[in-house]
Length: 146
Ligand SMILES: [Zn+2]
Image 1 (spheres, rainbow, N blue to C red):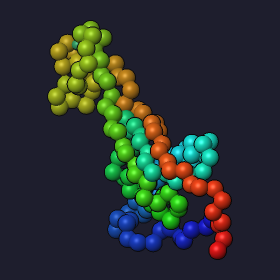
Image 2: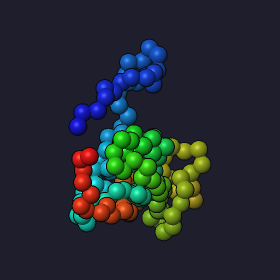
Image 3: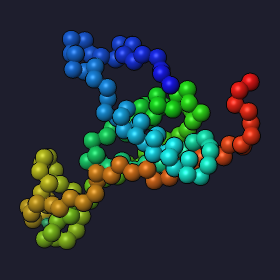
Image 4: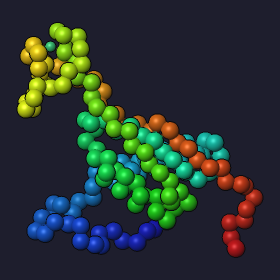
């Protein structure tokens, strides 16, 4: 199916041609949608109702932009109106000396233990996972053409 041309509208910042490149989140939304469709297909036919995903703080995905991309991806499909629920996950930063989860030192770019100064070990936070896909079964036998 061929959609209408992209690139209309005035999203681009003036005088900055680099800004017109498609947002990264749009590609991810397409990928999520594809994954969800495959999951639905495994169970027969259906319409997507609700999708829950995990987005880690280190995944370089902006949840708001992803939701926006999602709306664009499902528009004009049978799945239009399906909700995307984003569960934002923080990375766990653990100090090997203190053996506890810590926040990085206040005002620092570096992941350093605020108590002992050791480099923190970072775990998780890079998730980009589809957690749940709920869909509504569609009755077979309804004629497609009218
Ligand atoms: Zn420490």
